[in-house]
Image (cartoon, rainbow, N blue to C red; front, side):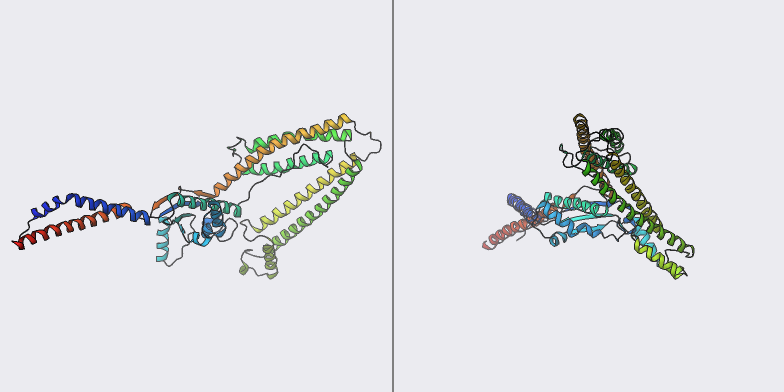
Length: 453
């Protein structure tokens, strides 16, 4: 019995629908298999912008460990935020943090290794990947990785960045138990503290403008300066001129006590300044005979080195500023604080002097009401200004926090199994098996006929 190639084509054409159905069934089975086993990974690339990272250090001077991206503090927040039924360990084992090393650095490393030299490179760009389970959708893997990055940014800023804030006081309509001049003192101190914060922000980012309010720091400073230079002095003048107080003996006692406390604080700050000045003098003297004050082995005077070591222990060793810079800063800050305490004590003394006269007529009702209304007006104005200021500060914090870590890509996801590859394999196998089955059936039939004849 002879079977030609044309016979084979004839058999295939005869069973063409069966073969086609077999191929479709194979493709469907491949889809069902991939759909059942399919899982998705999500990935994102972040960059840490602080210069210290490029030296292998965190902003606080400690060694930076990029695996803090998946630290328990971060992952615990992620689990709570997304209400995940996972443990920290189970979530952590599915996250991979990979440093991205530029090709140029790889070439340098190879070159240095050939010469027997050591080359250290500290990456600041990282790829973070979350490996999802088959039960997790594309939305799930995106949300989990997005939450990890967001919470790490919050963790990083909270750990290494200083958050700017302003002091708030109660701006209620009620005067409370405070005397009139005490209320004005509180308002004045609040303005002074707020302007100090705003001036610091303006010196760092003078061009910053809040997206929520449209205000710059200079705008806010001018608003507070107007109240401080016009409204507050006017109220002080009215209080002194009219001897306006709720209880004169109690007011004098309170300000006497405040003055004593301010003078005690002044003495403490003066002592701190004196200690800093003494350490500065010792450090300077010790350095005259030490070629390199930061190298213990180069000095010949053990007493000088002991002085320097003692100063190092007093100063934070992780700070990037020099020891002498820190000593000067401590001295200046303590001296300024001492001077401020003296000014506050002088103010208390002035209040006591103004209200201690014997032949002073009591204030009339109209003057008291006028002062109370003025204080209420300033409180109301500061309450509204305080809301705007807080919003600007919030926007500023978000702006500065975002500058520490850049998210270079969006959170992307990709499938771990290719449907097209599995479909192609299934179609080929299905087609081959169906063709083999068809040919087996036809050839068996022809052979049976042949033997029967």
